[in-house]
Length: 316
Image (cartoon, rainbow, N blue to C red):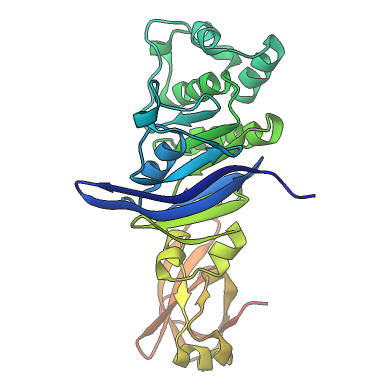
């Protein structure tokens, strides 16, 4: 069964006084698909999201929802689209109101659906509080609940995890996962942190200086990055040149990328490689080994001593 294409972006271009922000970006988002837009700062991610929401005008190109044009602010008296909800990094809540009032004034859904949103967003215990009595993470979940009360088909989230500590981030990840799974809302979020995106996404779209450079499943963009820019976005990597491919006994690896967990170390007094650096990350160590001024990074669950000699090979 083919999944319906919900939102289409066709040849979007945008230029500002600082230069070209987007260059002929095209993509399609399926219904109930979790999509991540990734890229370095200044790659055009937020601009793309705002144009998709109908809040910013492209120079050329179109966005359609269910094959109907999403108008930009130049063609719409009130910017935005009623079925596309957008949460910016700088969202605000109405002041001096209780949370329940904020949600009630925004709601056009049934009582039962409203209760589902409140449960999913984990804000039931906050309903009687005023908006100036909330933490940043609580405000964010309420802002998302407020948007969901409009019953959108698409929810766009711009860097939702960027200002949260580990505990609050884990809570929000649960919320976002439930939104797509239990409410059937198609979610698109901007982020460049792999731990925040790879477990959740069905597809990852990578931008560089306004150009779409790669899109695919999380596994594809992680293990088969098209270039070093994409590889670097999703964690540590090793670019395999001809000499390293020969050392590994795999000449077909030349020009490819290997993640540190794809390699393994074996302690050996006659080993060619020497442990140069050991970095501890709690559940694993990042080991840097060296041979003939060539460095390779390897993940290991055990500690190694700087100066130890080892063999380097492909993991099983």
